Length: 239
Image (cartoon, rainbow, N blue to C red; front, side, top):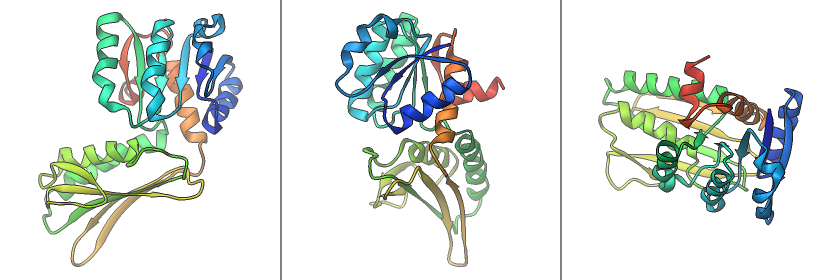
């Protein structure tokens, strides 16, 4: 499979190493100030583009890839105000887009565990729930996309919570997410249930970027030849 990489920092290099190890070709890399490469024959020859950039540039990157008729797999977070436009491109114009707030297979198992625990805890009103997430200092958005996905899983299943908020709650129905940015931490997410008598918490602690990169390459393999708006639930459901 021919892969283009949009974003060629630490994550891009990790994805490249895994893609090559799995027998794929990386036909084009696009980094900051290299937008002209979207017009190149090399980019247009790609079966799929894997995009890890910034919230500010992601949406424009998707549009440029679509203009070149290249499907996109993206793990960039912080741009979701445009997600309906991306879904419309897929349904109305036949484009292909795979999005995940986190490509780690372990994190996606954690998502399922989080929902299951929330359903159980909904029976016990003595417990309040909150969340913490920690990432490296280079991460621009807060809370992380993974934290938002976890929060949505809690809110779907805890009757006392109707929305999430960053750092401080104004009402009891808000789920507080506290974000920390430290060093080169790949990602730590914790969901905490606390009562007067005890604390229950579940944590996913990523050891490196490798798990995210492998998941992104697996998503590219899954996306190749498909149409529409796709996600981890589609891929894992087909395994």
